[in-house]
Amino acid sequence: MNYFTQLRGLMIEVMLPLGLLVAAGALWPRLFADAHTDVLRTQLNRMAMYVFYPCVLFAVAASTPITPALLSVPLLVGMGTLLSGALLYWLLYRTPLGRKLSDPTRAVLVIGGMWGNTFNIGAPVLVFFFGRDATRYAIYNDVLMTMPLVWSLGVWIATRLGSHDSNVSYASPSTSVWRVLATMPPIWAFALGFASQQLGLTYQPLVSAAQFIGQATIPVLLFILGLTIPWRNLTPRPEILAVALVKLLAMPVMVWLAAGALFEQRHEAQYAAVAQAATPAMMTTLLLADRFRLDSAMAGLIVGWTTLLFWLSLPVILALGMIR
Image 1: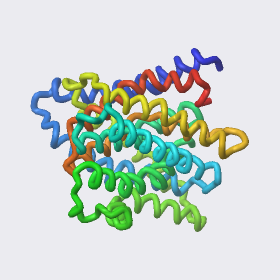
Image 2 (image 1 turned 90 degrees about the horizontal axis):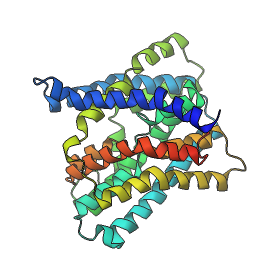
Image 3 (image 1 turned 30 degrees about the vertical axis):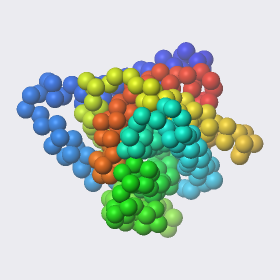
Image 4 (image 1 turned 30 degrees about the horizontal axis):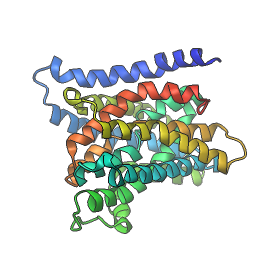
């Protein structure tokens, strides 16, 4: 399949439905005057967190054997995350780019440039390139890399580099992971599925039922993304575009190079890691900004801009041959 044929398929099969779902969320408050955006966003988030996403995690964990190739994805994306964080720290704290920015603004930009929307946007991209079972790469990356690092290193960045609030109850990385993650239903669903797979107790009809319910996860979360992005305030700023460049292009290049250094040949899992690294900023950036008194407006802007520019950056990554 040549580049243009593959790109056309990607745009129609992946980018078009993703774009329509995000656009639906953006237009909803304008089409329905009685829509209470904050309430709608909160309730849909709760439904996704407590019902839809746990079903996806259970279904994938219950039916996916652990392999070195699978584990290479969180390893490589984690390396890209840390390298991107170091680069962003230098750009925003040690160069003129971030000199006039407040610490809460710089911290939220670092967080936004480190972690991507690897499931809501990353999973459909993976399915397009590698088939339906490729969702496992996004799930294991989320559980083994994104969640632990966000709620440890991400919290440290938010509290120590951003708000400078040493009184936050779980600002210490040693306690943040256990205290926060232990209360998340998706973690328990993943643990239950993983245990059933390891013990040989997987019951396929139950996995199929969970998969059926979990199909709503991505559409609902993309609709929420459309509700969340501050569309009227999306003005380009140098610091936002610089962070977007790091997140959407520099980070996948770092992961690509790391895969070449660690593996004799790149295979499906390594290409999947590059696709995960190329995703736009995660929505959790907004949660961290609100929770730790960072710059919430800037968090919305970095999520919005990286999401929009992703439609341009992914074809570049594809043209460079870093995803096959």
